[in-house]
Amino acid sequence: MVQKQFQAESKRLLEMMINSIYTQREIFLRELISNSSDAIDKIYYKALTDDQLVFNKDDYFIKVSADKDKRTLTLTDTGIGMTEEELENNLGVIAKSGSLAFKKENELKDGHNIIGQFGVGFYSAFMVADEVTVTTKPLGSEQAYKWVSQGAEGYTIEPAEKDAVGTEIVLKIKENSEDDNYDEFLEQYRLRAIIKKYSDFIRYPIKMDITGQRPAEGDDKELESYVEEQTVNSMVPIWRRNKNELTDADYEQFYNEKRYGFDKPLKHVHISADGAVVYNAILYIPENTPFDYYTKEYEKGLELYSNGVLIMEKCGDLLPDYFSFVKGMVDSEDLSLNISRELLQHDRQLKLIAKNIKNKIKGQLQSLVKDEREKYERFYASFGRQLKFGVYNDYGMHKEDLQDLLLFNSSKEKKLVTLDEYVSGMPEEQKYIYYASGESIDRLEKLPQTELVKDKGYEILYLTDDIDEFAIKMIAQYKEKEFKSVSSGDLGIEPDENDKQSEEEQNETKDLFEQMNAILGGKVTAVKASKRLRSHPVCLTADGELTIEMEKILKAMPNGQDVKADKVLEINVNHPVFESLKTAHAGDQEKFGLYTNLLYSQALLIEGLPLQDPVEFTNDLCKIMV
Image (cartoon, rainbow, N blue to C red):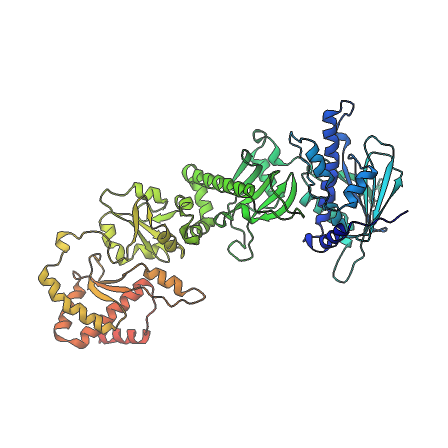
């Protein structure tokens, strides 16, 4: 028997492929099963044009069996087989694909599509095997052939005996090394797991001899071992079944089988697209956040299949970050895969699928907001923060997609409202969408800065999440209405006639406020009479885009950004405290300074800001009491 050599280019490719093309060894089983499926498909297509050839699907299968003692793993199929010439061309020349040639020669339609395209998948077997033996008998011939290779050194081909048409591949599994465990590819449970993971939806049965134990006959209650041939793959994927035949329970069962989550999915979307790009997808919107969702360890992505064969467990390119909570799968024939069928080429088809999926998810969420509000609010409690991050990230690029999905607590409704609901309920004369930021609704209800807005009967959105105000700033305006913090310098509300100070009163207080500002020594940018306060004596407001609440959040970040909002101390000139302030200003400068510092400290405490000197504050209180 003459040892034949691979072509020089093929030899280098084989060495490279074994060592670097595939990232996971277990992929070899997926590749060999896909080749077997292709071989059966070829008989199916022959039957379409050959009246004498009857294709009965029940006669075709793939079988996987392991022998631990001999360290062999065997795959047998009932496919079309190969002639001596095909063995030479398909296995002797690496990267020449018999499946691809068959695909070009035959216009493949009606839902069947040959998987193999590159002619390299077979050689992934050498990642786990020292020797590979292929015995094959082609359709329409009585002569079988055997191909044997131990890797890059070459191969032999000789006539052989084989009863049935098809191909048998025997892998001599490598011995374990210090770093590598090859025994796993001889274990029944491991082989079954790999098949379920990658090849569960191959359209032909994948059979294995499963070993088990059962009670022996008689009364001794001993167990006896038995071997039973079982089909381990599902074959018909749920996404290829008619939607009308499926129930919510079917979709929930698939969700649980694929272990997309331990909760019950809130909503599912079944897509069967047949346009510019053909694909099927099942998407799930979960109800609860995974334990690691808001950590760096969480990996987004959908399972990606090509003709029912798993290509990627998590294809992140199919989901935008702000919809990273979505689980599910996509199956398409139109994707351009790389040579190892592990990774995608970033092409037009992938982008089209991703765009369609994004729009489907958005539409489903909008439908929940409108028609199933209680269900949406449960979802929003888990993932609303992610949507708000999506608005803020990428300089607000995605705000148009997400702003109608946001919910905020309402001062009027005492419940969550959308921006559209807020704007729809605005009085005609109201200029802005008002909001207040803080740690809790209870605290925001008591904020002095809200008094004027509430007095006018305007609704206030309560922002209690640290990302809320940053998202609102990025949206900037909604339906031509700008957002305005109740702590902004100008609320855009004209004071009532009885609230306006006369020119004489303004001149009288001007010197007082300037002196207070001097006493505070740059802690605030200005001290002024408040137009917003009603019952409270004092508050702090922000002069500029950076609000006091944003300052607190930024300072609390790990990098400790030293940012400060431009603060204004506002005094209620109609409050009794102001009369005491005026009296002290006129006759007791020491007491005036004391009152100024106390009012400033009071304003800091209302905002939840730290006192610069708590001891001084308590001493000032004692002075007042004495």
